[in-house]
Image (cartoon, rainbow, N blue to C red):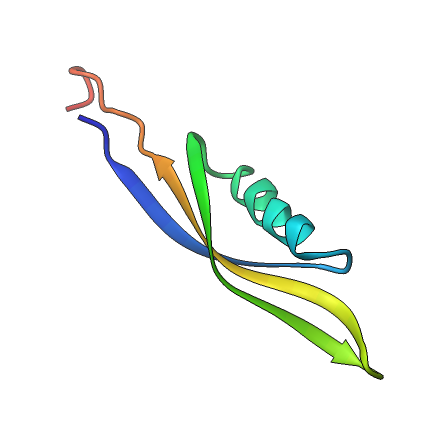
Length: 73
């Protein structure tokens, strides 16, 4: 049986929502293995002088926990 854990991550980009989502996965993968999916809960953008200046996502990242071997249990 495998166990999946979900963490919530906030990430930004100056280029677009796709890059903001990729930034979330890239940063999470620096300390987490076995990432399986990302669910975008919320999208938002900052505006200045009637122009979007940055894009943000609030995302849930799902990853599978490593199974303990018989020696570790």
